[in-house]
Image (cartoon, rainbow, N blue to C red; front, side, top):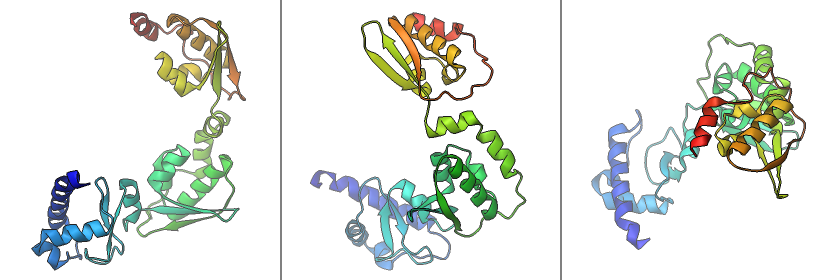
Length: 259
């Protein structure tokens, strides 16, 4: 810790400097901090400051002063803002989960625009999506002010139908995997994303029909010099759309040959 003191001092000096320049309208900064940097540093360290954390106010309507600041990770800072849209989900088992619309977008793997409409429609979207993901939801509540009041442009049923075909739901709940058995008896199992990284082929090559996806993988591994005995599907395969990629992808073949 001693070795990092100069770095901590420099970072906190910069933090205070930026705060002076960008202090939110209606808020003020504790006068002793402005007069003495060491006072600010002492207060910051006593509030748990560490390199990588960001300062937020406990009460967003209060000032930047001792007792009203804390230091959080960047992802936690988002939820501390007064104008962020939050959706609180209460599950049937009594547990709760409160996340920003950005975080719900990552959790559900759908566009955040579905959760940036009116509060009522955003709740309907999240409820239906979690239901289709197998989550048992009791209630969902919108938290925060300033939710959009414009007319919603997407009907829930249309969005769900487009986002959650049988195949899409299967990929989100339990990604289908391909298991390879090599001639030496060893095996390797991975999702379409895993095999895409391993072979250099696009993920879409392994998200088609069972026959085409296994052929793609066997071909790609053979080009890489791996001796494959069988390729099989693990789990229920999703309903793939019409195959659009040829079994032999010239572009990926060329890149793999160079390797």
